[in-house]
Image (cartoon, rainbow, N blue to C red; front, side, top):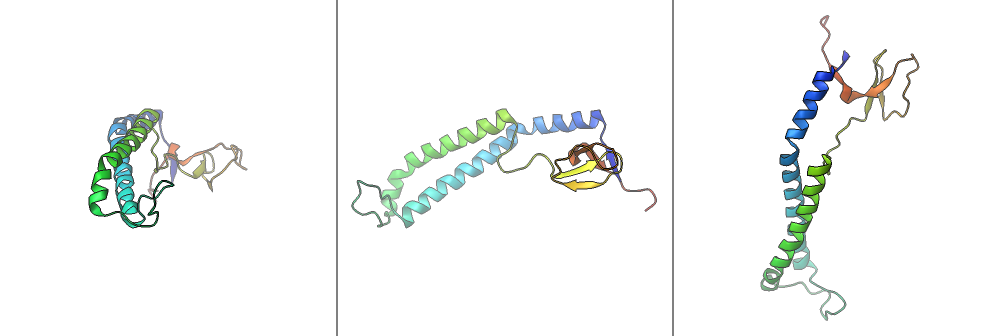
Length: 141
């Protein structure tokens, strides 16, 4: 059955989330920067450099030419890393992980709703986010 979490449990979850903020920001930004770097190299190899000043728009670059582009690509990748890391670290929000549940539960009748915009249930109870509840198995089961 659904039981509302105590204020102590909610505060403990916030402390745990805050302690993982640096690690999560570091991992997320590193993965995204690496994918950005690798995709740029692949695109240079497949498509080529192109641009309005290039005569060979559709001709892919040779690996020797791509290696000359690596410092610039690393610079762009580091910029992507820095922006994402700073955003996640200071805002506390993760880029691709949703922090709140899409499920809402009535605190009185324990009826669940998905993506509810209502704040009051039909029974008169208050509809709260599922993150404010914990599941305790019935002792009858």
